[in-house]
Length: 282
Length: 271
Image 1 (cartoon, rainbow over the protein chains, first blue to last red):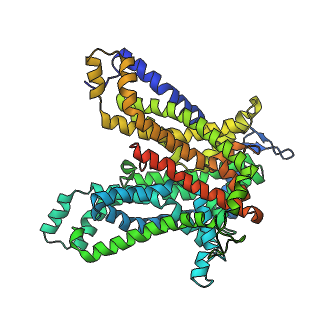
Image 2 (cartoon, each protein chain N blue to C red):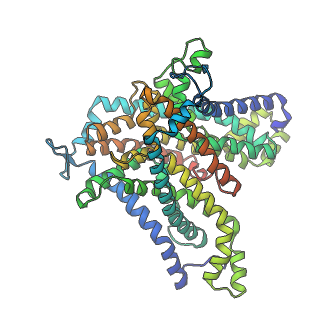
């Protein structure tokens, strides 16, 4: 057997030595912090000093449910994340179809590199680029004769969609790639026009890949506050409110409680997406 | 199939080209703007100037932030390189209960939004570890960055180990090498490209990160993204911000293209 089985004591020792340090780091630093996050959402702050005191309160979580401000912000954030996801899917699907099914083998490689490279360009700079593009004296205003839509919730959706587009293109491209040619040929041989083949054969097979991409576009949009601050004008999303509570209001427990909202939204979204088989595509 | 329909083929080509133009125009604009002679950066640029580049080279705030970013990036990359490689070996070279859970745990820090990770680390460092003397600073930034950089190294090394299989290592053992010799003389040279690519990409990710950094840095430590964000809304700093943004854009291309050439999993590392 080529792969050492853990049945042999030497192999088990080596595995423990290899796995120990990274697991200790991730469990202590990461999962441990997540546990602190959960617990501290139930802590209170000293009314005079603002210091966190580990005294139980359900007030932070109650505020989430009862305060209409948080309800509105949550709803707005979810809508923005959905809008970004739909926009990215609409742009990415034809691109991925071309890259996978039309482009020559050489062009494919070049296209994957071309889509991937902007992913590594600074996130902050990309958001800033849209601030420049949309500014009242910027290129869009110049091209349209002063009709730039300016900063606001629309700018947030466009900018976030721009930021996360490669995250959608790459899995969908891989999804198109996995569709076997034989199925398409069989469909054509049986007399289906291309439109029917795309709709009845390709679409169901690629849907899990779109769902996989949407996990990124949705999840990354939910927590964003930087791009919103840069192009959103007065728009408030969950990220801004969490940031404000922690940094400006210095209310760490409330910030922790608020950050459970995007966390919960993503867990629910992941569970929903699991039904589509998306998680095997990530 | 689609190749047989010229109309659809052309439409898809046009769409793809438009998509790529959309991806690159904003980046090009940032670089162009750093040479814009106008102080208000109106479009079209009023003239070409190197003035802002010279001003940026003398900006002590930006240079200091650059030094902090490089230091944090190097330390986080070093930690991620060791831990990510160990985890990749464990998952690729052993079969054990909970293997999938290990892969999932490694990927989790970049799947969840940065703000959740950031608040969680902030709560741990200030509320839990604050009383025992931990303060936010460069050290806490490095811990945060290393946590989400592990996956980058892990993905690159695991992909290479999967492709390599175990036949070279078996051949080495059959020829009488002990495990340490095999590791040193066979495995590491075969992995070198993936290790360097993973390190480059991990560094690039750390260099660019702002959200986790914001919540772990405290008021005294400024990385380059934090510096840019802090100066973004100050009109008199706009020229220097433009240059730093242009530098970041151009610098991002270098590690990615290097990693690409080394056969790194550039597309798969972050998805």
